[in-house]
Length: 216
Ligand SMILES: *[C@@H]1O[C@H](CO)[C@@H](O)[C@H](O)[C@H]1NC(C)=O
Ligand SMILES: *[C@@H]1O[C@H](CO)[C@@H](O)[C@H](O)[C@H]1NC(C)=O
Ligand SMILES: *[C@@H]1O[C@H](CO)[C@@H](O)[C@H](O)[C@H]1NC(C)=O
Image (cartoon, rainbow, N blue to C red; front, top):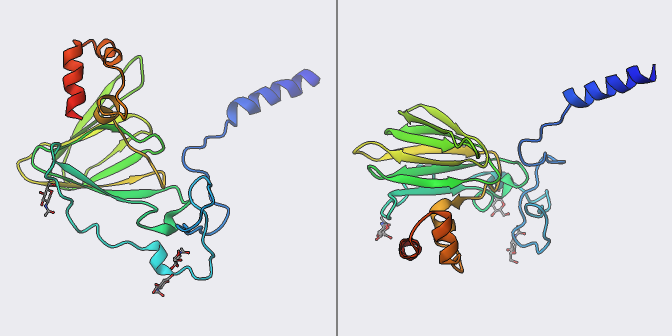
């Protein structure tokens, strides 16, 4: 009898693993960020609910194109808690991405969010790479109206594969997804990572590693 209960317990443990796949769920209707608070919490402290109004849940501006005059030819316009205090604790945010012709949103990861992206205008080649050791590369060319997912934490990018500007809107499963752009993080850290570490890691001459550091 006891062994039957033990077996049942093991089966339950195996089948009922809890999947927590986004920011923790809120324990109240809303927690509008109090930007004045000096309290350090995971997210931001809540302002008193009484003076909260619709403005706290509102942002206007995603109709405006971002400035893509930069070396990569893209611009991300984020809409997170700094833009919408009412997003605090809700585990979601949104961005607009503008691309110059052949511009790229360079390889990067979001440590805290899965991303779902839709093309509003133009054509984008997108892709992501899975973890070691496989490092499988999943890629696709998207047209207006197409939707693509970048799983949490994986390195991904987009490239405008057209002679006209492109626009995408992407939602992220965190109020603060974080961005680690691979090139900047590795070759543009502050202070620099030792050049011999980079040379060995990337199998480069030190001069080439130094050159790459000078670019970031
Ligand atoms: C933050 O402080 C300023 C100035 O003291 C005040 O006007 C504003 O209402 C405060 N904001 C919040 C969210 O409490
Ligand atoms: C909402 O409250 C803010 C101050 O907290 C105020 O500036 C704004 O006018 C209010 N908006 C509405 C629609 O009542
Ligand atoms: C876009 O950015 C470039 C480079 O920083 C700048 O020279 C240019 O004035 C900006 N254009 C607009 C419309 O803000």
